[in-house]
Image (cartoon, rainbow, N blue to C red; front, top):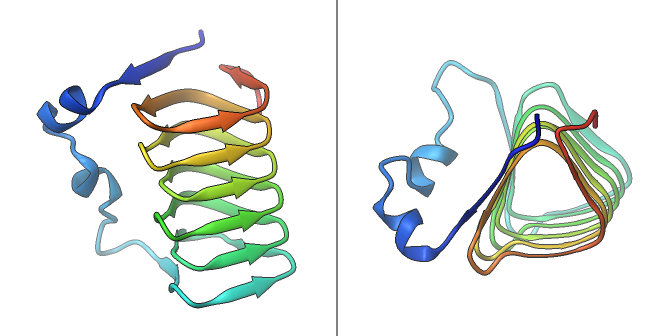
Length: 134
């Protein structure tokens, strides 16, 4: 069953599960952080959580939770189990679980996700398939 949730700013602020809680990663989990000012050319993958505030030019694969910060950018295909996007992606995006597009997200490419949450202000240009296999 497909599900798409649309939220305006007032709803997003009013909810207990705000952005800081959604972006939190449990202390015992492995994490990979790509800081602002860092640029990776070529494919990049991790079996752990990824926080991307830099740039990736090439395919990005995350076997767990991917968070792309407001300054984060990807030019290429993105694949993840779960994702929270605040930055920019120029390429297709495939998320097997929940994809949350925050208000600053900009996607130029096709989206495939199990569940999609779109905050007011988020933009995507491409086809969108929800509830299908990624």
